[in-house]
Image: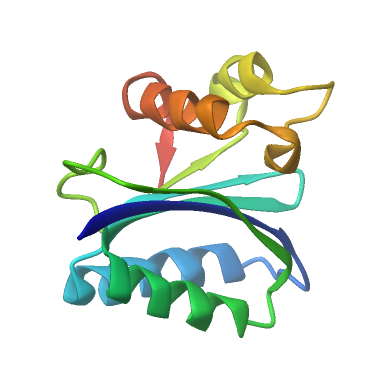
Length: 138
């Protein structure tokens, strides 16, 4: 069964090369696993969308839970899907650079983007809009 998992976690002990390392490893590992998705980093919070086989995504999420760079993990949405949103992407990265701030604030419940406070429907809409209207990094 094909699923989409959205989770958030707070970044802990991120050095200057950690985000690049996370992105590179995610791309390499996810491609081998058949997982697609996107990673957002805003105000020290990771928001990630993972798409793929239910068992594979579940195992990947549990591996992420053991990563020392993540704290306060929370599954924000989990749903079976008919097709992938991020086809062909083993992992894309978007950050709250100036070009993307309006989009992050559009979905924010307050002055700062906080995915922990968002409803699943808003998170889905946010990721859908990310696909076409953001500056991607990496």
